Image 1 (spheres, rainbow, N blue to C red):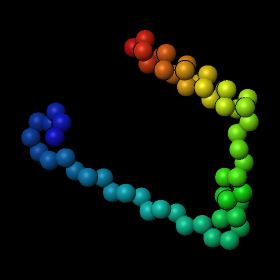
Image 2: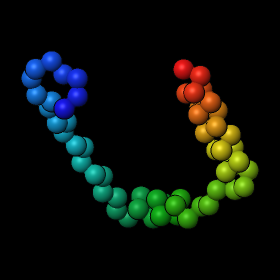
Image 3: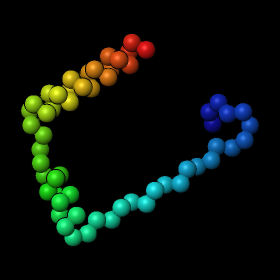
Length: 58
């Protein structure tokens, strides 16, 4: 159960899942169709590597 001294661990309440209708739903679907460019993927890898290296130093 973790490192608690006595007591119980309380569950947190989950937030409601938002529902999209009409134009908002269409905009979301269109935004999901946009694929990342090769440059964008390369930048994401550099950023991930930066944080991995930073974690290893600590």
